[in-house]
Length: 122
Image 1 (cartoon, rainbow, N blue to C red):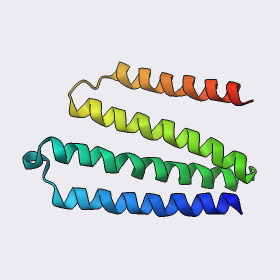
Image 2 (image 1 turned 90 degrees about the vertical axis):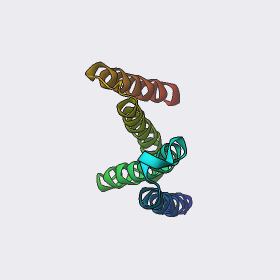
Image 3 (image 1 turned 180 degrees about the vertical axis):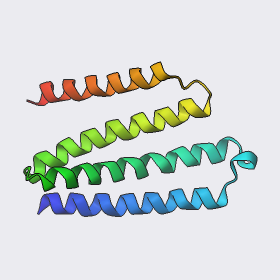
Image 4 (image 1 turned 90 degrees about the horizontal axis):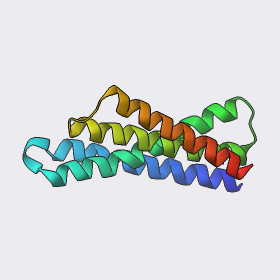
């Protein structure tokens, strides 16, 4: 029952974050809103991406018959890592410093963080 309440809470939060993200896209012009619009864009994009990734990864893990609580813990960690990497890549693109080696370094850091957390937990 505890896992279902986590999933429901995360679903509602992801939907609310997505609606906020849509409102930012509709009501803020990036050319005229300046730094406020950009910050709101990333502040609403991050929970939308993370929530969607966590729920998607959890659904895939449950499809392959992984136990609910370990699947939720792994999905949460991996969703946060992937969402953070994607938002960081968008920030790099915005500041015109995105290069192939940035992508490689961020992915390597994500893989290292995942391996470290798996060794630390187990």
